Length: 559
Image (tube, rainbow, N blue to C red; front, top):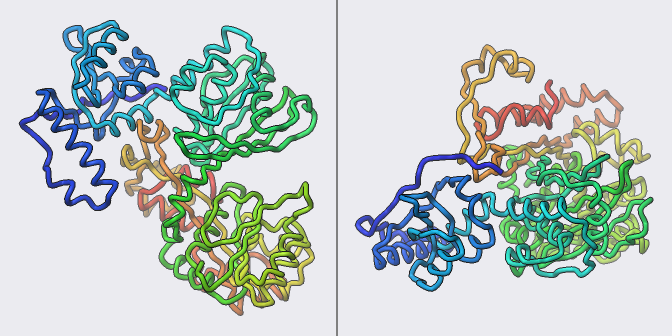
């Protein structure tokens, strides 16, 4: 992965120490710790009479990085900066360790000029750099050289040392692929089989990216077998789909992986869903609706609906549109010791404190419908149903909402109006349906411009008109796009936010549904009542510089 060449980092000597009072003014304990570490590094540089390198906004020399073995950089916590007079200038966390410096010079076979950097900042640069990608590439190289036998021994710990020392190429490739996926914030790993090669891709912020160069097809069955062994699936069965899961411990953190194997024309494909519960739980500890991207007005509406004593809050959208996250945020906001909240999900992706969560297990006969019936016998106040898939579940969920429970659930539909058709096709009585509903939320996720590399751009009139934007009004508007940098892995995007539309089930809307009026009439009435449609919200986010016009065109219809 090529990195951008940039300006050299600022160099601070002992004559220019950073303000020592900065730690006292840090807004949080984490910031204070980082500042304290920086101050320690500065004092070490002053004591050793060495330059201190400020690693904020540091841009690496890609060619120089490639010349150093990956395992050495992680082991000694350093990276190369530049070459001066034939000597390699390195940024290292502890140059006071003379034996270590001598050992490093011996291993690299060249004289070194040490400079001092913060240990955590060096680690962060190594993580964000191509180093972890190179571990993956080096693992891949071994596949092109020799055929290997599968090692069926599973590993419960993944570390850089293990990845660089493991002698089994198959294990090394699979483990490194997983490790690198976590480093790059991937949500899924896709292993796709072609006629002559195997492609491995990561889904990052909802978009697929190639993880590495294609792998020779002859290693395909061994890679799939390794994944099956880890997931405790049948290695011999290659004709039907299989689902499984496994757990790994990485840096002391347990992470769950959900595996789906599916036969295709050229062989079996695999998708590994990464469920980093502990990491997400840290975020979810303070997860609230206001961090998801809703407008102030929509937020006010939604909070009103989720605090109703009974009824149904329905969230809709395609797979991967953040429906579950929205429901979790809603449940997190309203949970209290006075209420019993029970959820039934497939699977339970993230654990919420103070909430009873039930996983669907269809093999054992625990379906959404059966689980929901059982939940109602446990005297809940609020219920969350992961997804309404069939007529039976829909009927029970609506009856629950009508009998004094607050029900949160999801259904697959394109927009708030399409939901109505879905339920009517499930043979749900329209009167019961509209009586139970509090609101319908339709949402999508859009990628956000990377704050580090976003820059102003102008779009031509043709593109604006094709995107449904008034070229006369916005022809001179300054839009923003990301160029691609180290921080965002060259994509120009970092993170996602929700764009949504909320249909308030007013008396007028209810009557239109009962009268079986057209979708156009319902939309017109909703707009007159102040509803902001998804496309309008998306365009507003573009005008604010948060995302791009091309990005919203991918997830919303141009009207």
